[in-house]
Every structure is written in structure tokens, then in C-alpha cells.
Length: 400
Image (tube, one colour):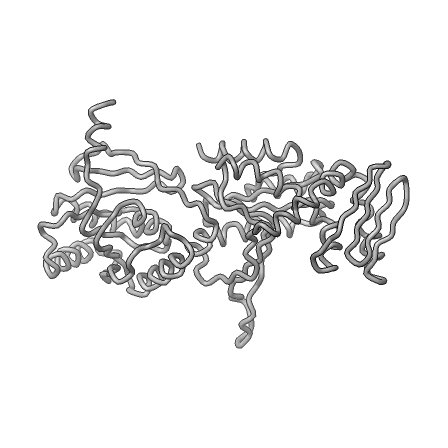
């Protein structure tokens, strides 16, 4: 082990106070607060309202996540002119004097905020001879400068974010979760019961997909399905399902709401098929917190006055790789318009931030020239075969 590595292991990363420079994004603050233990966190910000937003975030998340046990009574803020480094610097010195911080162990998180805040932070770090750090969010690594006059940092991996709702809270704090997409033990049993049917439908997808409209029309009459053509039989009535393709027959009871089977048979089966494929990556901890069919609501900023109804977004599949949020759209039928791609890209950015990844998972590898160009422009990963393998490769490549 190198001398530098030994010095790193010996270093005490427990601080009395960590100063955080607070810009528009919550992520740099959140990552910095989780990384090091501190008695108190102080936010340098243009408005104390920003600190209140962060307090709400931690209060909300610690109810459901053991990694968020941060005492919100120890979060403080200093309001500054974020474009005046002298003002920022003097406010930090005044706060330190007022609270007797001269001989305390201090540290500065210089990741967020304006360039002027960064310069003032460097000056304050030098004044107190206190370490500072900068988080490279995309690479998910933290550069820790033990010596404020030095230029060679310790490089520390950022603690991974293993639950998708943290991304939602950070990037869309006012969102509402209508359907959380968590597959509990009972729901997983149901999906596993249908796995053989989902596999059969995928195997014969070229024959099933053209029947979607006929299935819909069949069901609309009396909530039954009765199709028999080209050695393919499909029957559904009162939760009883029977599918026979080329002599291979599967019978089961679909115990959920009746309309759910219609949704399942005209495309939901493919979402479940992909979900089952990804369970292995979940077990290997390549991905975390795999969700299926989430429904999230955000405020409609274009609505007429008095109309407070939210806009809802459906995420077929969502998960984290520890660094970023991934959102996947599963299409078993043909992709007929660019709107689906725009919605996928927009929703991914809203709920996961600029570094979030979006994937279009399709049965059909032939998108057409126009849609191929749209996929490229929107930076969407298009996967149409070897789903598990290609998704894992995409995740690994994204981590580099």
C-alpha cells in the first residue's frame, strides 16, 4: 500500500462543521452531506428558502430510508450575494466568529453554487486552513483536498444512491407518487405465475402483436376474449385464461382486476418479461430498487389559473445503478410517433436530472429513419434484442 493511501486511511473525516455552497441543484449538497460525518451543516445560499427545501427533503426521506438519519435541527444557512465573493467570504468569517468556530474542525463543499462562491470558498478554506472537496457528479467521485494550498487530492468514490425515490426527491421535490411501482412478494408471485405465458407470448410475438386490435375489440363487447386462428387459441372469461399456440397450452387464473388482463395481453406482458430479465441484474447488484409501472405526478405549470390538476407520467421500468436513475419504455407494438420518445426523454430528465439515462426497449429493431434520428438526438439507448445482456453492457459503459 502506498504512503498516500496510508495517510488517507489515517485521516479523520469527522468534522464539526461542513459549509456547503448551495446553487440550484440539491444533488451536490446531498452527496456531500452523506459522505462525511458532521455536527452541523451550513448552507451558503442566496435565500434561506433553499435550505428549507433541503430540510423538507431529509425529513421526508428519513421516514423510509435508514441512510437519511440527519438531524435537521443542525442545518443552518447564511444568505449572501452569490455574485460577490467579498460578501460571501465576509459572511462566512462573521458566522465562524459568532459561533466560535475558529478552533473547530471545518470542511468546505465547493461543488454547488456560482463561480464566485467557489472562489470565496477557496479563500475561506485557506483562511481557516481547512480541507475542501469537490464532487464530480457524472463520474460519481469526490476530490478531497486535505491541504487547501495543495493541488493533489484524495479521490474517494461517492456513496451510491440505491433507491430511485431519492432521485425524484432531489430533482422534482414537488412530485406526487400515485403508484410507486414496488413489487411486493405477493405481486412478484403473480408475475412469476405468468412468466411462462409471458415467455410464450415473446416467443410467438410476430403472431400475437397483429392481434392486439382484435383482442381489444373482443374484450370491449362483454369483457371476454375468444380468438382462434392459425393454430393460435386465446380464451379469457371471469379471470380464467387459456392460451394455446402450436399445441403448447398454458392455463392460469388472472386474479387481478379484469381490465388488467386486457392491458397485460396487449403489451403488459412485455413489461413483465423485461422485469423478469432484470431480476438477475438486481440479484447481482448491477442495479438497485427495480420498479415496474410507476405513475408520478408533477405540477402543470401551463394550466389555467385555478386548475391544480397534476400532469401524470408513467414509467414502465425504473431503477438505479448507484450513480444515476434509469428509465425504460417497453414497446411490444409498433412505435408510430416521436411523441413517445420525447416524453421518455423529458420524464427521465425531470425525475433523474441531467445525468439520468433513458432506454427504449422494443420488440421491433426496425425504427425507421425518422425515429432513429430522434433516438440519437435525444440520447436514448435503443435495445431490441438480448435485453439483459445489452442493458447490462449499457450500464457498465455508462459508469466509465
